[in-house]
Length: 255
Image (cartoon, rainbow, N blue to C red; front, side, top):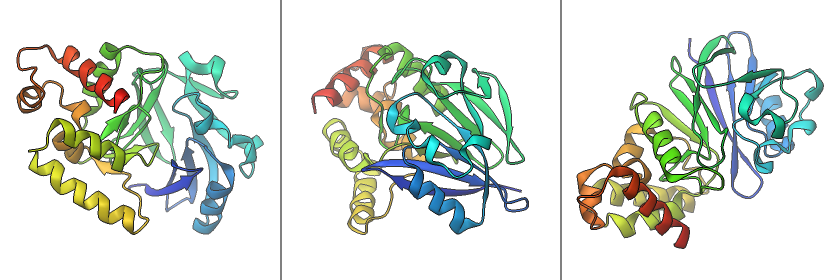
């Protein structure tokens, strides 16, 4: 049995995700930017929402929580390290922990960098990784709290997941991320092909999220700081990977 996955657009450019057990109709939502579209998707799918998984404390990932149908009965899971900034948690988790949600186990990864205490949820059986604002489609989150070294470590953790993993990230930033990636690796054929796919999707108002980790490995510069082709393309052949990552992040911040 694998879980179903529903991508739910929220606010201007956020995504929430609903996972569901088709046998029991139990569902969980990952991050809650806005209640109304999540409630509508739960109703449309005939799901019974039992659990909320939070990745980090930023308002556009938690502010819709109180508006969820049956919000008072929901099992809220989030990072112990971030608990002081999150809604009240029933279960506080840390890296290495395993939780059981909708009939499947999920592993907790500390992916600090965008914030300190940001976590990701990896559902190995179904092949989902909920990465929010750590690893994103063709990008990664701005370093509001963490260091380049922390975020590069987080990128390597996520890059080590099975390549077929669906990376479920928190925003529709892919087109702008693609434009930036092309400034670094204009000769990357995989990237150029992906850019065309993104353009078509957005013209049709289709989400570009989730994406497979294999595609991110080929095209996302923030996963490629130790790849010789990228290092050569930006004139940093002999630099260590953390320095290269920091340079890529700094260029994106100025882009």
